[in-house]
Length: 510
Image (tube, rainbow, N blue to C red; front, side, top):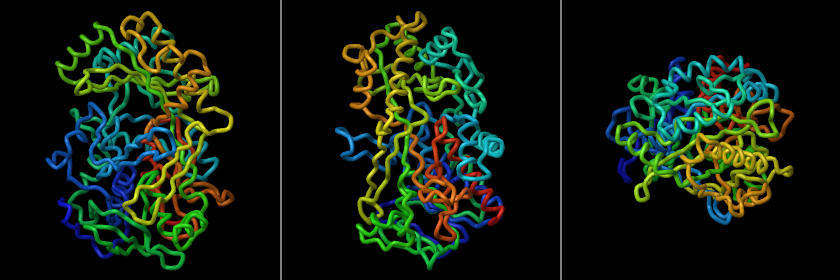
């Protein structure tokens, strides 16, 4: 769509879903299948169904992360060097540019949600949604003989070192282990949530998708939602509806609420926004899994083997993941380690492994930088700010785990010398901690900025059904709803949230 073209938005809709991303596509499809008429307002473009030439090539290619149609979020001046927080502004959302890895987490995660937030979220209640979403996204697990030499080397080294080998990573009662990754990749294509959930319904008269329609704020009539104001073709357009479901993601869902006057009263008044609901939790509770990426020089042997594999065809950047336990969670797992070997245009293939702290205790916030809906918010993840130093210590153990495995006979000669962080000046626990503080990074899994929780917790933005407190007719159905991040990459849990909130909605109020 050209810069001057304006999408035609209907004047009203039965249900408005704000954001057609990972969770938004799922909630939309289930509501349409349940007989509701749904309007999807997506801030980015809608290039159409799978196979459309309008899709950017990098967002379809599943061998590596996509970079086009990015929102441009970053950490601003929170850290000495800005950290980019890549989020995809297009139908399908982050499922259109991510690593296509689908992990579920552990039973403790979702049982914890249910214990805190309310019924409907326990593991056994969610299992049908995990299974249904896995089928809808056409998830499959790599076979061992599909692995690239780099991926096989790490997997073999873990197994030789005594780490259990699993068939996949998604046993919700399993703890430490390693497996080939489970991915939503079909014939080399990243089979994003829009392809999986929306394509089968395109042409259904109950579904309307409007791309390039950025939702500014809710329209409120007293304590009820009456619709939204969207920016389309540079103009503000009102669309009326009695039910609005926010699926803008962890950064955008709270900004819509804040611009609507729902949030911390003092912050809203400072920006000249009339307070509709004083809700201190909106934008708070931001947390993400801190990440560290190590790199090695690579040997002639692995360079040659990877070049031969790439020439023969399919050679994704990542294919294997290990679930490991730090000393803080010895009975379960709280660390992901994944080998990673991308190809760079100018300097050839590089060799890495990364680790993520899966249960961070640090918390940050998303705040408005102004009232312009196109103005990016202020994002502070609060990396390594937990008073006990838990997150830093867990990730330091992750570095030690990678180094320990890299030193085994199965990997030592294949990897070559460590390049980053490098052993010189980064050997002791204190030195590793200093390195991590100086190089904060994200595992791309921000959550929690409109969390569900009990009415007794004033920081809980929504109830267990996703209904925003203080306003009738507004739901949250994305990763912002998570009170605590699961031990997982968050794509599949986000889809499950969409499935679960859609089911609550179709069941009617209780």
